[in-house]
Image 1 (cartoon, rainbow, N blue to C red):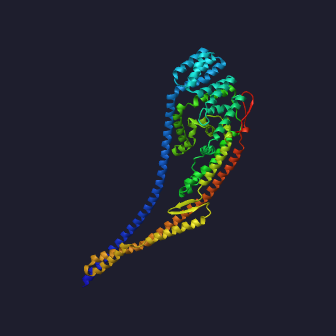
Image 2: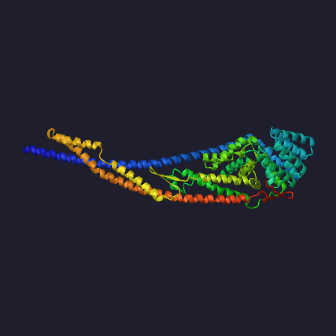
Image 3: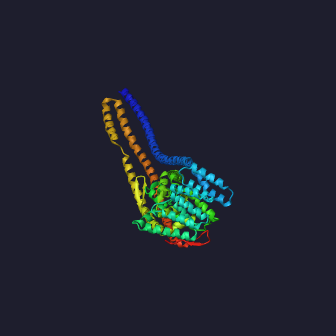
Length: 571
């Protein structure tokens, strides 16, 4: 009997040792599980940041590739222009060269004739080649050759040839010839379908190149064009739409995420807000653009010869329709480069200004192109003033439309999303309410998380199983007792770990609440500042409207090169 007690005591000591070892092992495993849980949470956070960084990288990489592609394409397009139309450049250089050589009588007439005849052979089909032959023949008083060459130039391109010789006649001081050629040119014009080179005529008018009576003739023609266009249904609406697009083409495409970083991160409304800031910034951009056009004096050309030569260069080098497809591609590449590879923004800009590269436009669209896109229309600042002054009323109406649309597009409420909580604010006035709502939401999440920290079905099954094994060990022996004790010990340790898990959860939620409240308050502060920023930018609309109201054609008095004064007619 005593031996039995010794054996049982020894057996119980072994069991207790095994239980302690199991306790330590389970504690170690529990700590490792907790560590793994923390690492999983950290990994999820890192993955979220990595996903965001990867998206930024992809967007940046795509822009870089588009930028590189646009630069490469631009070079290829220019090479193709040079390859396909390079011989045009040789002919173009001769246009003013012949006139300037004739001015100073440094080149023999035979040389001029020979040079123009070679151009006729090297540029088949090009209208300027026979025009230069006619010019050289006219300078050498070869009437027969001049007549035949002139007829060929007119056959190839009547409008450009007529405008070309109108400018040449003006340069030579032939007032009657200048008037006749302009009459011929105007007789071919349809104000609904004007070729782009009409801007050369407008440029000459705005810069005082024509004599007083011819300028009056041009003004009357322009007035009749506008009156004719205004008779068609929908004219006013078309003008407002046309100028609305022109104004929007000046809208910046800046990102303000650096200024409003918290809103950019936590507000689903941010893209619309960012767009609204750019829309409101348009007023200041357009106002600065107009001031650059109208403020200060315009330095006229040194002489009539210089002024006409500049117009002739534009006419012969900028308005050949054969080059338009490549010019359009070149313009698109230029916009992509200006937008640092943002093809979507470049396409939006191109859509708003693509009519500057249309073969034919109506007269009011031609004025819009000249006023807002001088780099593509190839006009001077004087022409911009003239075009804007003529279009003043349409611009005022269009600006009112764009301003109203921009204001309507500003989100009335700003949505904020932090974790899985969402809230709305108009001007940041309900900060305390949203802070309370966020706190309530996180408290509920904490309660749910803590409530989930409890013994599960497996634990209760282990208790039942362990009790059964312990009771059964009376007859089955110590192995069964060991198994039952292990089950009960596992449940005990799991129950003891609940408190630690709950404490960890409480600490995490406390940090989450602090971070979330900080983010929410930062969002509310940025909403307040954003509303002030929008109001400040929108207030410039009144300054722009007042500036436009002060513009009038009859205020722009031009001095012609014939020493007479010309007042632009208010149409």
